[in-house]
Length: 125
Image: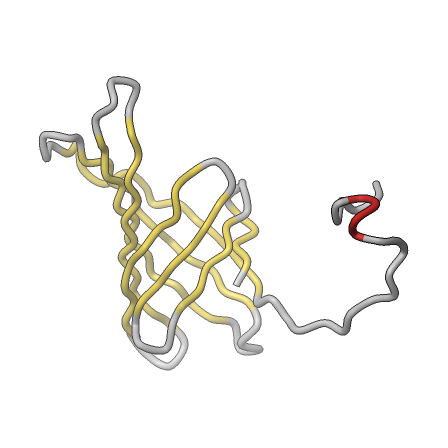
């Protein structure tokens, strides 16, 4: 799935075994778990680690309730965010926030417009 809100876009994978991974521009990837609530919704708990300006590690925990559209190709999530300091202290959960996403679909390969060695696979504007 590709999360389209909030920005920057995030690529997420809800794995069949209940694990979760994501990646986004400008931050470390998240790792977590999900479990079904009912036929169309799931609860997710995701953890990220980031180094602060003093070199200490902070943990961010995102907790979501995600609902998949009837089509199975899009979803919406309501979430909270908690930042946990290097000493384990937390100011509590902030939110709720909202996110939405769409499934990445398989597409046929297009007709090449040039060699990758010429442009290093940089798309034309």
